[in-house]
Length: 142
Image 1: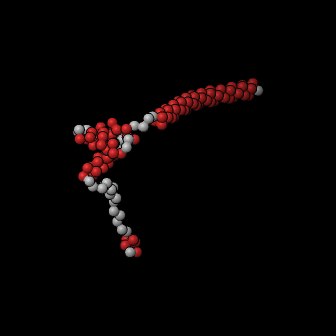
Image 2: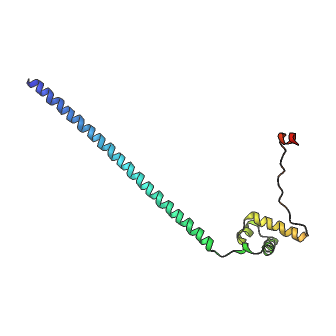
């Protein structure tokens, strides 16, 4: 009888040790999960603050540009074309002229072509459109 009681007490002790070991492992896993969640929360907070700052900066820039006075690019066409042509005649690059006038590089090129056409007495050059190729179905209908 004493031997059976000793076995019961031994098995109960082993069960208690196993339960304690299982609880320690679960507690460690819980602590790791807490650490990960805290790290995720910090990252989300940083992302939110950065996004808000970016939106505020973009809104401020848009407001600043909306309030800005019209630049030289808003001048009458002939005057702007003359300024661009004069600057080009003085040896300035198209990129430099575009930066000074607040225009796109393509707009500077267009203004130069318009000025040259006006000086030559020709009508304004039209943009060339690429010619469409006729498909076999369109050719059959014609």
